[in-house]
Length: 282
Ligand SMILES: O=C(O)C(=O)C[C@]1(C(=O)O)C=C[C@@H](O)C=C1
Image 1 (spheres, helix red, strand yellow):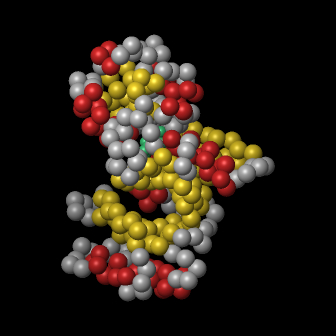
Image 2: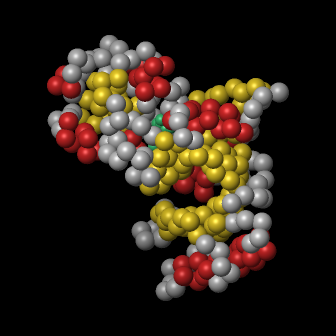
Image 3: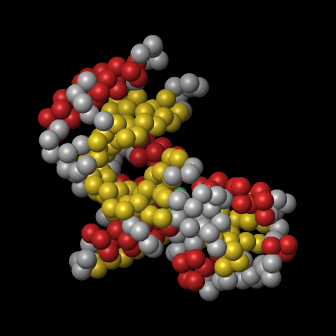
């Protein structure tokens, strides 16, 4: 049987590299069919619509923080998306271009996350180049061969796939650049060292968030991430995304904390419990 895995395309993205790393670590012997999608929202919608069995999407970067399209889309989709695994990938950006040197480059294309992760380098080395946000780090690569005034921020792996020269290697502003991806499907997940939940509150009142987080603190459950996103209903109204450290010794506490949160919050979405695989080299 072939397993269809959706990821941000076109081919060569870090999301595709994460999908391949996940498959090597967890799906040995399974026949794969990788499906590139034009953006992260469409990748997640493809799992919800059962077009693909699994999607690999970026969640959080060590320099730039949360990938907002992923958080917003998993909250909005009615389907009960479940995280099967987190995959942490090292991210080493390169400047890819057929230009002879930097002085020829007028435009730099990339995903907004990658442009932000290299902003100090761009400011120092290409202060006059126009930065153009694209759907992915590889979206512009097919156009670069004929265009020496343009460059893209991409991986060396992607440059090789598109047979393009790497003009400068390792241009991210901080060398320890990592992005966490989630492998998401409709399969329920109940065990793992992290549980991800999102919730909205009934009203914006003093102590509302403290009360919600207290359900976990009072039971000795540690949170490893708290992130807020606008609810998009009104200015100052937020959704909260939390990651809870879990193991087989605290599942009773987790269950009762989630029951309290369910009763207290307006809407709660539980994206499941899962483990993390850290990839050293891609
Ligand atoms: O554009 C890509 O190559 C992606 O897979 C997306 C993405 C992201 O959204 O964070 C993934 C990893 C890097 O942090 C930069 C871009």
